[in-house]
Amino acid sequence: MQTFLHGRDLIGDLDFSKEEVETVLDVALDLKRKRALNEPHAYLRDKTLAMLFFFSSTRTRGSFEAGMAQLGGHAAFIESRTTQISHGDTAKEIGEILGRYYDGLAIRHVEWTKGNPYLNEVAKYSRVPVLNMQCDIYHPFQCLADLLTIWEKKGRDLRRKKMVVSWAYAASYQKPMSVPQSLILQMPRFGLDVVLAHPPEFKLMPEIMDQAREQARKFGTGFEVVDDMDEGFKDADIVYAKSWGAMVHTPDEKQGAEIIQKYSSWITDQRRMRLAKSDAIYMHPLPADRNIEVTDEVIDGPNSVVYDEAENRLHVQKAVMALTMG
Ligand code: CP
Image (tube, rainbow, N blue to C red; front, side, top):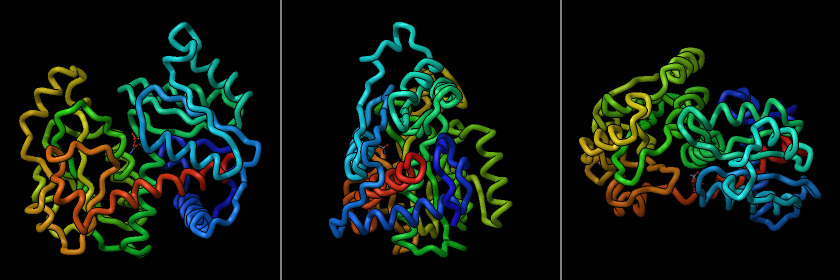
């Protein structure tokens, strides 16, 4: 167990080593147990977290805010548009100044090519940990919650288990590609054979793909890319299917939206779930475009673990905050 996480940032999924991620998940399970037993666990008494949002949220906001209160501290919800950022406060100033007020800075900034550089710039000038509540490249806390959920449902020995990370159709907007990118980086370290399925125009970032292949090589797991959703689902133990945008293919939003329309058949339905193993779990970070991205029958069905997955956001975030901000 590697426990020296005090003062550390969590921006990219590989910022913490495999052993450090195991520590996070062990602490998360302990905190989950303590909450179930109503045992006090105020490890961050009198500590404060700034939660700076450049984009909307349900789960991330709720779970960080509740988590800080349960740890005995306080989280301040700050929407960027209510600040002076649009009038000139730079990332350096946010890091320098908010870093002197708070004990941790959590930021969500998903704008393509802007979000991740912003977080890194804040981190450069902040004297307290910067936590990534989702950027354009990574969604590390979602991925930690996903891994904890997989441990709970499938056990810790994940060797020879197949996880399909699939693109799915959604009509609402071009969603960030941070969730699939975090999954393909983190899951190979924990033994899963990952199959990434997407139409040709929905490639992930080449540098992330290279790092994912490297992780798979290092940990001796499979990593394959297919352009057929059915093929991806075949014999899968874990189905993780969600939409993301065509930003790598084209930065033009209108063109990206037109491309999405070609693939409305990429929906997770019962026929596709039957291609996976009978005990396969269905995962989605939410929000989902119901009956567009996934049918009600699947997301509300017996294989779906989406609510346990959403709950685990709370426990893993509390673990990281307690370890880094304590
Ligand atoms: N999964 C997730 O990050 O949810 P929110 O966008 O609601 O925070």
